[in-house]
Image (cartoon, rainbow, N blue to C red; front, side, top):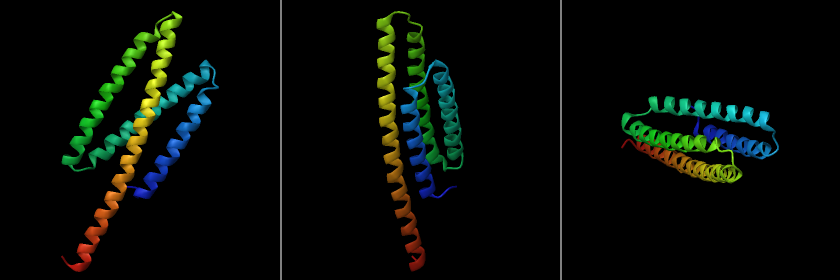
Length: 143
């Protein structure tokens, strides 16, 4: 397992790369957008797999709660994608604009959720450091 500081640095770097990709996507043509979409989908699958692997190494009492959250999140994302796919077939301007507005709103909310998860991870890191320091203190005092 990586050090917590390494994981936090990696998360920060991924966030910066995501921000760069989002800015670049505004300038892409359709072919480039499709490539970016496939890359993003691949990254999601990779992170889903990494998350599942990290749960496999965790205690059952902890991993079951995270699996429940992951399942709920996946269900939500799949519902959103299904609704977007239905609306993607729309050929009139009003529906296309509504779809674009919804997709932008969803992206903004997803970004805020990522920030929330990042903040939660930061707090979890501090809690883990504090818990380890306490365990070391107890070990050193022979308690």
